[in-house]
Image 1: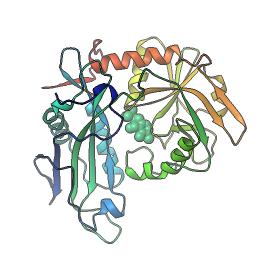
Image 2: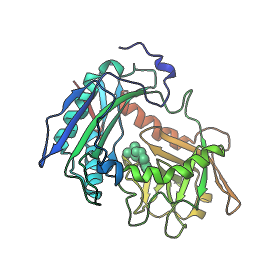
Image 3: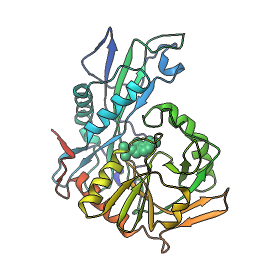
Image 4: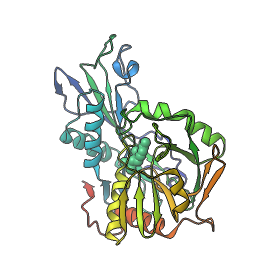
Length: 339
Ligand SMILES: Cc1ncc(COP(=O)(O)O)c(C=O)c1O
């Protein structure tokens, strides 16, 4: 294992040894090749640079107590990348190629998979972009698929801490019939103005409302939203949010714990009725919410009144993290061992 300060790793980029690359040309994907360069050579007219033909994924590999490296639900990321590619007319990466590239990238960088107990993990970033030259607005004929990895620290150092969210009405990250359900760079570019403003004002992130009516809760920055009331896990049904793999997993866990679950539109006023709320995604698993501030309406929705994360959120969080690190059995078949 490399000598890094595992307990104080940031959630940022740290150089690993290798990345894996494959190229789509003449209607075929090349065999994945391993590179030790952090750089790419890109055509000045590549559609990925001009017309936003770019999609990515994010998943993690975890080292267990037994020393084994576990990948969490990589098939879901592979399927989501296919749907992102289809959404912006890129050549989809076949599941088998995705698997080979991801497993090779993890294996080749094994010494960067953080030790068990550090709370850190190896973040895996598959990336797909149009690399062929075009000047007119049309899809590229060539694509590049890269998988790189970087060790990341736990999102919350020193334990899960509730965060504050700011409701945003003057920026939309995605339109109702737009690209919100796929993971393409353009959605993130569109969200940056609101996210930076929320951070500058001291908030953990921004809570977007539905773009059409501004009546319903949509997404929490780069994470899905959930609320808990009356033993029910409620999460938005919306045509403009990313289908989070963490959220899908939390729904399964909640049901296995005897909770009811609902995926439906969540009116803003319902925020007053939840006992707990949170944002969920690969980075933090769950970020419990302390306060949601609606500055336009002069309202504040408060949770975690004692400053601590809610009990239900923590139960869900612990169960999912224990499965990811292999501390608990994996009854849902979510883990693949990297050998
Ligand atoms: C916009 C957005 N929503 C939700 C999520 C959470 O998705 P997942 O749980 O698959 O990481 C992410 C992160 O990938 C995201 O970028």
